[in-house]
Length: 317
Image (cartoon, helix red, strand yellow):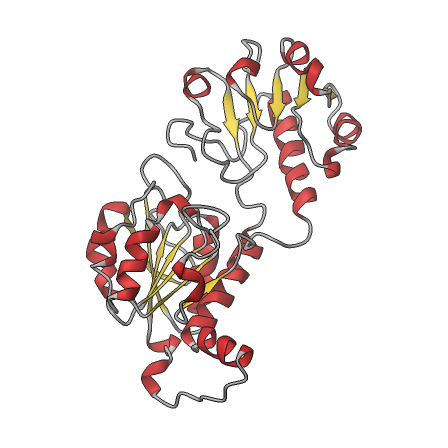
């Protein structure tokens, strides 16, 4: 069996061919230069990385995506139609994203974005209004996307006494810490009940731009909105309109419809918005966790077992 690491690859994968061949005997693993890529893939059973239509060969049976949610264009039509099985890196940085999400939620609930700006301006302006904070034991959080990340975010919030409700197209529950998990069709009915709306959904044909003006209009004016999933799921103009019309208390965003968020965009200047530059997944051990998924799937493939983290190619996740 032969597996090709498709360039470009980060330095962390440099020793993966030797390690994988030692850990899973029976595999030939190569990391060829770009000019030799097509020739190597002609005889490959599997590949790791990003393919283009010209690199998709008849011999390929398994493709391991290098991310949990590959960028737009990864699942091009020829790949969807090809019999190759695709797996992803789901659940390799759940803990990091969940911790970052909780930091964003706590910051918003305690009004920290305003105080961050006051610190920069050397301004002492305490807000003693009890309504300026969200009391988590009295709050309801709606987790939109109850996969690995969403499930962990909900579990952590439940430790604060928050009532957690999930919405997911696949997960039916029960999940630790969740009061219940509802199907995706229940989203619009649940939005008006939430104090915190937290998106962890991937970018798919079904979720692209799905959080629009109509959905923001369903939120409570006192609600906070958090997105740590994928930027294209949220229409930023609709978010801006909701904030400017005071139909939303604030937002915390790690991902954006356009990245980087352009200089001069009005979101940068809003005191009710907290921005981080798509770093929720940052943390130690990421490369080793990806290697572990690749190694486990290589063993499964060699033994004829079901692979982990299988993807519905047409749905992109």
